[in-house]
Length: 369
Image 1 (cartoon, rainbow, N blue to C red):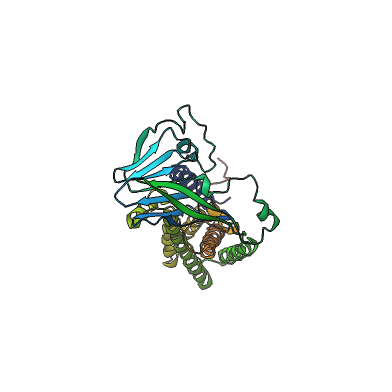
Image 2: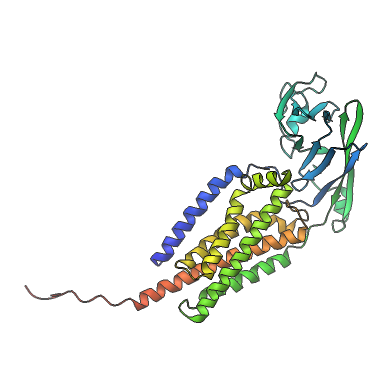
């Protein structure tokens, strides 16, 4: 293998390993958020209506979010009717003796209950947050069966209601509840998306076989750079959509989520934009920049979100079809730029060997002493 390709492969491997290691802690943000689901959970309202008390589903329906700006405490009741959460002006408190406190640690609800968990015991409150908003996994809003409901199994191609659900609250002495629905939404056919991704990959990769020193090679380099920049922009948009779906409140919350839980995907998109601009400007080492940025884009924005192509409810805000377009664009442009960059590096290495002048014969070689 030519030395430039060996160096490119080594750098790409080191960069990818470092990004994976650094991204692992960040992935803990919303760690139980599904990559995608075919069950759509939605809040239909709070009854009776109380100004300042709102609820919604976040993280593709994995968590229920309750915001209390009424100026008075609101208590969320657990699965046995016991006090579970208290949200109010003083912050958010959880009852460590409520089984829901432990079961809701994971989306599967499989946490082993400690000895102190007793719904009949007096509440033991501990403060866990200082805001008026809290999000948690609530088993009443989810489908936890090992298989689909019988009606869904009988007609999986039809969108249908699985159940209506309620989460009971207590606002002072007034019984209140969050009401919502859980629907089955048939998953999309991933085949057309894979066809589109494959075609995009082949078109971009083919640009790598155009000789780099020609006018056609310059145009090919610029074309790949421009399309990689489009993939970077799609990745930035996808990252923002995921941050919005995480339930981050307001602009500040979205920015915080982008710089914590979504930071590496965001940097990948920005890096692809920069590498695309670098190639458009025909700067030195543009081929290597294309390959490295394309590898990161395909891995962190494309492969990491593959489930979106085959699930009806993606973990991102916005129309599901648009989210799939963003993932497909990121995957196709990333993989295509990687292939084009590596092919151009290989062609350049071959050209360098072919045009390298022969080494002059050593003086006196073969002469007798």
